[in-house]
Structure formats: structure tokens, C-alpha cells
Length: 298
Image (cartoon, rainbow, N blue to C red; front, side, top):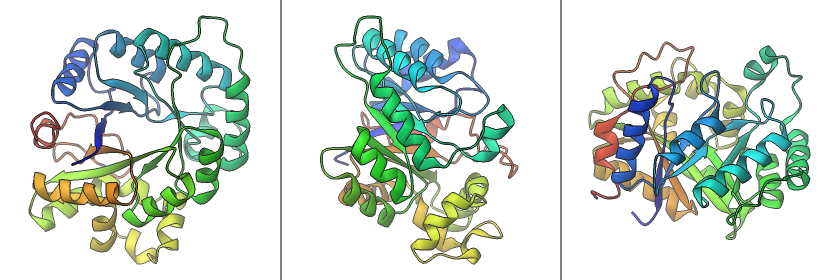
């Protein structure tokens, strides 16, 4: 695969010393970047600093930091600090999250486009007293719809797509152009049994399938309620996930690269995970998958 290949992994289920060893293992396997999600667990910037201090080459990035949980000044300072101390191995991934995850924290929900517009404007002028990093941390905006994608194209360094189709990636590339990063996260299932693979993908993606922002994008591509209700159709699962053996998965990932993705991020669906329909967090480390797709072993 002619691509930069990274992983997205929750760190909440792993204690500090083991976490360091796991990330060092990803580093040895040749992965370009580790993206760390944020909901209720570890603070992403502090965790990134800890892991950057214990690694040498792998990038450690927020994937994705909630803009309601971190004001623009704090994110600007964190990005500069982490890039300075790591010699440019941090990317600032930012997203607007979902009302269900924002309002319980006491924040008033603001529509995504005006929120991100204002946030990025402030990010550029936020005062930074400490020495400026030699390498500026790229700002990567999560956005599935054209509104946020246009904001990212105008005011950020790249776009972060999650659980989307090859066609959505192609459309995003047209908006972002050739000078911006296009980071695409794909859920993968290392299993050649189509029934078992799709069943696991349904369980792992169930929470996202219930969310209107994702449904809106899929609907624009011709999917409908029958595709995301009752666990999700084979058609939708096949469009947003990659399953099979390593070669089959790589073939699907290559399709995203062919339409313009600059960075691919794998997010394994783990058969040992307790997907209860209410949590999308994958706390286990899918080493069989990580090793099967490892750039250093491919």
C-alpha cells in the first residue's frame, strides 16, 4: 500500500507502563501515527505528552479532541508545547463531538460550522509565551459533511473522516484539494467469514449507526433507514468497513487512497470486546490485526 498507515486506539483500558510498551510495539511495527479518541477517560494532551516522551518516531495525536472541552487557547498552547518537545510528532485533531456528549458536561451546544469557524479563528491568534515549536503542529478537523469540510479546507491543515465510504472520501478530496491532508479512519475486521465479520462490524459500529449526523451523510449517498436500523445492512457495513484477510483489507484500504486519502487509519473491531450498543469504545488492543497489517512486516 502506498500510504501512511496509522491506528486509532482507546488508551483507557491500559495502565501507564503497559500503555508505553504497547505504543512502542506499534512503533516497531512501522505505524506512522497513533490517534487517541476522547470522551470521558484520559485527557488527550497530557496522554500524548507522556507517550511522546517515551517513544522516538511514531506520531501521537489527538483523534479527536472535543472543542467544547478545550478552549482554543488551551489547544493552541498544548499543540505548540507537544510539537516543541517532540520535534513535530503531534497533530492537533479537533472535532465538535455530539450534543449527547457535550451538554451533560455543562456546555451549550453550538452548531458545528459556526463553532469550528470561531474556534479556528481564535486558535490562530491565541497567545503563546513559550518558545515556538520548530515544526507547527498540523490542525486536522473532523467533519463528514461539506460544511465542516469547507471550513477545514479554508482554515485547517487537513480533514479527518471516520466511518465513511470511498465515495464520501472522493467528495471530500474535491473540497480539500491537493494541498491538504485527508485522514481517513476505517473500521476493519480480520475475518474471512462474511457472516461473522459483518456481525462483529455491526456490533462495533452500532452506536454510530444510531447517530443522525452519520445517517445524514449516508442518506445523501442513497442509503436509507433500512440500512442503519436493525443493526445495519450488509450493504452499509461493506461500504464503511473493511473485512477479510490482510490482503482483502489492504485492497479495500487502497480504494480510499486511490480517491485521495493521504493517511489511512485502521480501527479494528475486536471479537473480545463487549459491545453493548451503548458504548463505541474499543479498549482492547487487536494485536493480530495490527501485526497482519503492519507496514514494517508487509
